[in-house]
Image (cartoon, rainbow, N blue to C red; front, side, top):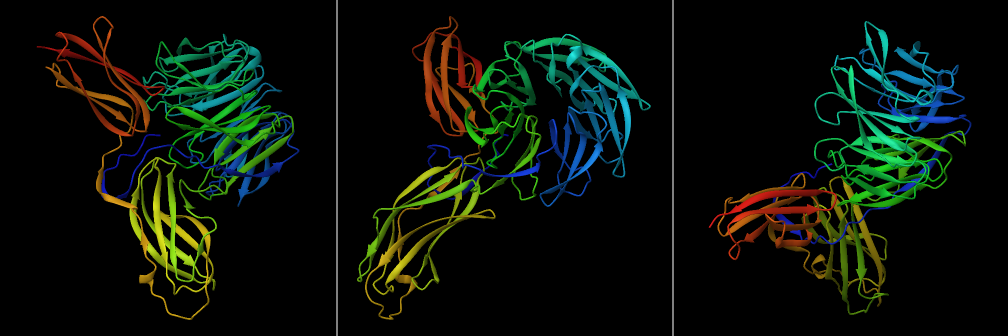
Amino acid sequence: MKLRNYSLLAAVLILCFVSVSTAQIEWIHHTISDSYQGAHSVRAVDMDGDGDLDILSTGYDEGCSIWYNQDGNFSQTIIDSNFGMAHAEAADMDNDGDLDIVAASQSDNLLILYTNDYGSYVRTIIDDQSTFIYHLDIEDVDNDGLLDIVTANRYDNEVRLWTRVNDVWTGQTVSDNVDDPRRVEIADFNQDGWPDIIVSGYESDNILLYLNSDYGQTWTEQLAAENIDKAFGILAADIDEDGDPDLLATSHSTGNIGWIENEPPQNFRHLIDNSFVGARDMVYVDLNGNGIKDIVAVSYYEGIGWWSEFSGDYTFHEVDTEGHGGSSLDVADLDGDGDMDIVTCGYSDDLLIWYEQAGQPGPVTINLFPEADPIIIPPSGGTIIYDMMLVNSSNRVFSAEYSTYFRLPSGSLFGPTRMNEATIIPFMNQTFSGLSQDIPASAPPGEYEFIAHLRYDDAVTMASFVFHKQGVNTGDDYSMDDWIARGNLISDIVEITPAPGSYALLSAYPNPFNPTVQIQVALPHTSHLTVTVYNANGQLVAQLVDGIESAGEHDYTFDGTELASGVYFVHAEVPDKLSDMRKVVLMK
């Protein structure tokens, strides 16, 4: 996801891009079924159109079912129990406005369409000749306005395309050259307007791409990746945000999870994790609500985990370490509370489980650090000195209000003694030191709680600490004017420049130049940036920057005063995000 552009002229909190905090998510486990034999695939989808996400599932010994969602409780409706099912997808196959089901039966070698007839499902056999249909995907491959089906047929080593005319389905072999295909994915990888097919070969340890031309009648095979031991899960996603789909992939044997850059012919590979053994399916989604997409994966042996990303680096987080023979998962807001939940199935344990996201703090948090511990205020009054740390772990900008209150010994709330309006910008991590709060002599004795509120959007984050006031209760009145808050929390008025939407080497101007040229680079996130200049012989002649730079557009000057006229090359690089070169001409 790209950063939103923003331009603000406001009184803002003092800004410092130091580090990024990712809040730990707490998960509540809900067992949907512990006797769903051979559970093999799950999809979260609103099958009945009531606004709640239901679960479409298959099992090797169970067939195909819909689990209808009733406020987070799921009730089973069996669609077909006559055949063991490996996989199912939901889509509006007949363009009538409701969702139908396409399912693959591995044991009976069937591809089946279940047409939704007002909640009842009419079965149509599309294919009864393929052997062990293991996986499928749905897309309009031939661009005729009707959805087509692509299947991975394990024992035939075949990828097969099914299209139709006048409700008559016709099968076509895309390839019979994939050794044990486990997953198929449809996406326009070469951006020519025609959906292509990518498939993982489990026994051939590779991933193959089939480029579509001639309305799906002609397919050109390309090797997308090799030496992926027991290649399994694949997912098309624009990881590098350059407008074309890249490829996420898993190795079942080694536990590698990585992504392959869609930059033929190099197709650079980027490793995310190398220890998630038994890795199968993935989802690319903003799981923690910080505006940056994460990777969520299921493993047959390791359970479920997710990886949060910042500037190309990934951090692993556990959801469930029990493997359960995990074979499939999906991510969606199952309980309608505004955050993402996870549903998965366990083949070896016959389980259907959903994990409710609960207890996660919002993207903005504050913490208070008093200078003294314990804090004792004498009868004559005194001053509390503390630091306040503010973290925004998202790429969003917030309008905020910071205020402080006291919970008095009587239990009543008193304040606010401080109130500041401010703007919080993306990935902020700042400690405001030496803030202080006067406690007057007239304050009654006893235990107090000092409370800081930060209200942003529709959320509130809070922090507090306890202190004691000595003395006796004189019953004297005290005024808000006696409770003085001090310390620099708000800076002067400053302008926040627009954050770019993507990484780019924007310009070199003027060009030709003499003797200097301005180089402009755009960074949507705080990143490690290197800008270097080479001559026509490939020799390094200047290094303009090599270090951490904040988000924004940055200008660098290349001075050619001491250099000869000629052609020079400016290279800008951010690891895994940007590698671009611009030719400039020094003309004296």
